[in-house]
Image (cartoon, rainbow, N blue to C red; front, side, top):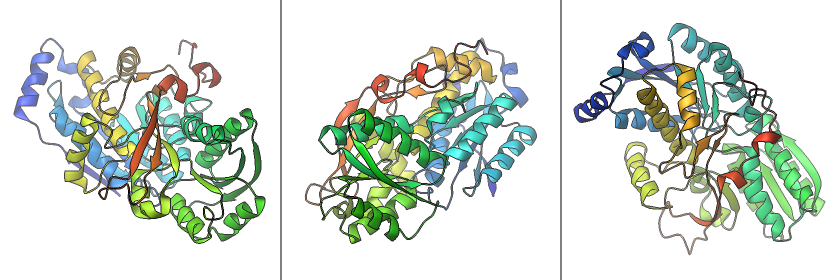
Length: 409
């Protein structure tokens, strides 16, 4: 279930690190090694969105950093948590207690991420959520050592829900994944709809990994709602979209709204099935020269363009390592203080900064899926409609009620 690899060291990069940190004692690195654990869904419903590609992204960041920090090696452990909270918890305990892992980065579901945040808080180790979405991670589930890096349900709802409602489509029906992520995404979108004068005409809840959406789609059609909001992700989202296409949801005049859409979902569906769908994303590979440069290198290793989870995993790992180098230690308190005190700016994070509640605020994007006639190549699938400034995209700090904000803890 688990694997470990030591990433090779680049002589030139190592020399640069050595010059930059000549005055820093190597005693700041616990156990003389920095260990990072990547916990992902290797083969289940979320494997294409994060999964092995997220591990590749973390490996790339370690390799690009030079394979060591402050003269000490960087090691990477990876594990498949099998979409089970109990497995995520057991793996994290073993990594923290037996392997002395300094930081865990995940591309899992929200329930598992909340459990990792809680365990990281107890062990005083950093946990980074790259693939989970619930705003509870910066609310009642926040951690002194937890970082919610890529996106959350508030940002997804604010971008997509607001855009669709502003076009006059105010009557919604939700088909929702029945666990923490789906509930949070549904609730945040419903809040946007109601605040804008709209109505929610009905809801259907489905279990993770559903294969038959017929009853849910028939209820959505019968409701007469203008918009059918899919508050799910991964294979659940793709299957729902395929069956909605077969049931003639959009042909019948209803709008299909994807509340969490990944590049890999669109690639699997094809633009002919998904065309015209609007969604919110934290990253698109073809946005500018910086995103293209990273994405082309990632494609060479993974055979697919990166999702926002995978790009975010690289960015988060790189900034974590930079914080260790700058502070001269892998101590979690020192690293978190550095990350909160310095801007987070790179090909992924535009205008980024880390708040006291663990939310990494950065610009998001409202996107639309192209038609087959507009798509010029396999991965040319999306147009960016507008940028959403981070302070507009994410929930205000004071609304989250994180217990560690202004607590002095």
